Image (cartoon, rainbow, N blue to C red; front, side):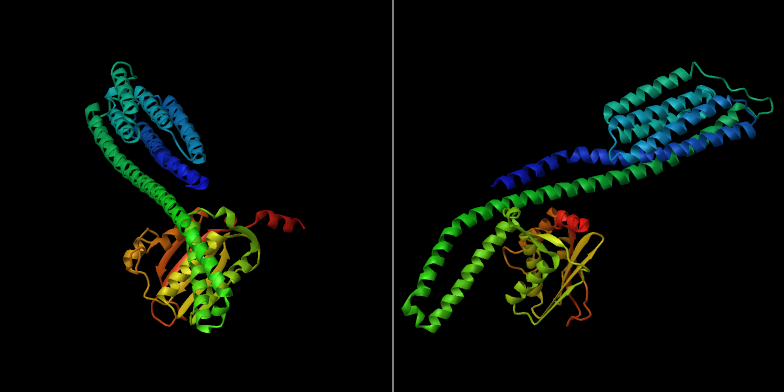
Length: 455
């Protein structure tokens, strides 16, 4: 394995092992935003409760002090919103602190409104269940101990409710409060836990995708090892054959025989083809990519690629549409050429009479589309597109081409998608389409562009 492959493999493994931490932070941020929404609901509910108690039931409560607590809660929620919207991750400690603030403000409100006689004291259960969902075991038990201590303290210390003589008795109001508290707990827990579960599923799917990418990168490294070994083993005999063939072509007895000359010419073509295949395998494995860049322009790169591909393929109709509005300098990358060439070869195998190649540029992305008039992709191939050893040709050893294509595009920061679509100018009713979408910054020479703009 060369130094570049070792570096890529090390980075891949580090990414894999860091994935759970990154995953927890991203999911924690989503859960923190859910807490902010839940806290706004609590603010609205407390304001409504204070208004109803004062205006409907005429129960005397320390309204100014309770409103002051609400102002603090609103300020804290605004600060949390600003903090967590700017941050890409939220730690477990920050979530614990946020829940602790909720517990403290709830305790203060209950202290001013009857303590444990207040039926809304059961909202502590909401805090405990949320902590059990969001926090680790130690933090959850800390919340349980804190809420239990607060509830025990409220049973001894609290501001009693002063009920007016016209009230129908605190027992009936307490029953109504218990019902309302139960409905609130049930509704909020259903909404909150449903959203949290959705966040967890999305995070687990993202984590699984990251691990899949790491496994595919590891597979590429292994393929690079096999390709390196094959290149070293086959390089010497191919070089020997090339020397012998060159000697034969200079021998007079062979030069007088036109049939032998034609056969030697065909042998030379096949020998060069073998060398090209080995170079392509090494290139796809990522071993010569950095050494294969040169300065060119996007139009020259695409035109040369198309002319070279057409000269080596006897295709009946090949349509090339270059819709890129202006020419600009790029770094010629052999891996990119090999990627496009591979897809064109697959399209030619499926549709030897008609292939279409379209190049566009929009939203700072280079879009390359290869379409054919073949039978199209099967549903299985579409769901497993880009997976190694998944091929519709039914021959052993196939399926690596599209796998390399997808991974080269990924290394360049782009994506590859495949679908079936009928082309209006195609001879058949079906056809497969492969679309590359690559960021221009991955191939564009920014220094050259900037110097031209300065001029």
